[in-house]
Image (spheres, rainbow, N blue to C red):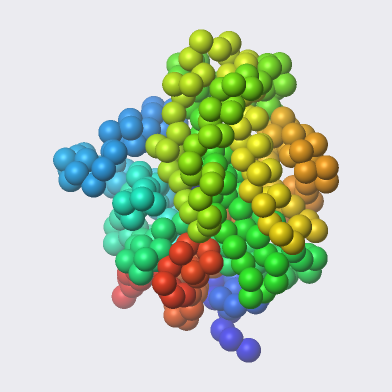
Amino acid sequence: MGKIFTAIGLMSGTSLDGIDCSIIQSDGEKKLAIIKNLFTKYDSNFREKINESIEKINSSKDLERYEKELAKLEEEITILHSKTIELILRDSNISKQNIDVVGFHGQTLYHSYKNKITKQLGNGSLLCQLTKLDTVFNFRKNDIENGGQGAPLTPIYHSLISQNLNIKNPVVFVNIGGISNLTYIENEKKIISFDTGPGNCLIDRYLQIKSNNKIQFDHNGELAFKGNVNQIILENYLNDPYYNLLPPKSLDIKDFNLSSIRGLSLENSIATLSELTAQTIYNAIIAFEKKPQNIILCGGGRKNKYIYNRLNILLNKEVINVDDYNLDGDFIESQAFGYFAIRNLICKPITYPETTGVSKPCVAGKLIKFK
């Protein structure tokens, strides 16, 4: 039997809502125990500060141009992550001495599959110093350097969950965050993954702009239910060449914009954007020759009842929230990064040619040891 490690996983996603943090125990292979989950929210001013930085970065030259400004923001983000670790340790009554490693994703600032560039703000060395814990970070770099797109990273963790729950294959896990991505598991050796399209990013951003940050997201899809979908604008979005690309493929929130819905009412805009999320997930799922027996939703967007209902109707099949398996769908990715950090310690890969397009299976992340 392999050693059981205890890891903390950290994830701050493209929805920019805050930091998800999890403590898990695993051997880095088949065993998994989830010990504790905790969410800390970004305040609205800090969220907007991150978003303003994201809007400035459209190329590698922009990363260089704003290097000093971004370094300061990275320090702030890292400090917030260290405070989240302190909180989860306090709440779980687990001492630092029992933590083997931290998996630190950081905050995605820029991701371009076309240019093979990805940038996450998160200083692993600083987090290691602040927490006095061994830290693995920069999870996407090695994949990109070996021909991959650096995303999505979660398929191997979805596979672990599927095996632990004995879910019947083929199964599809759909993570609806800022961007939606899916993992198709036909069997343990055949896993395909890619970004399907926007998740919450367009809906959230439109509401934040229109409400001057007073409304952060469409609670339960209530606004979408009140609106009507503009089919012409929806078709315009769906005509993006990305959707015709074969996987592996990945997206950034910069790959979409809100200009198409100018002139629509608030409710009709949200209905159209929500339908875009549902339609692109549906289109991705039905493209598989061997149809999934189970479709499982994760991420914040699973709570959007409009998207959930539309997927049930479009697929003519009951879609399952991962919470129905007694798992908290808000923390799948933070748990995954704890698992990935353990995989780094035992030199096991997390990305594969079928999931990111990498040339060979790749171990991910850079380990910073405290001592």
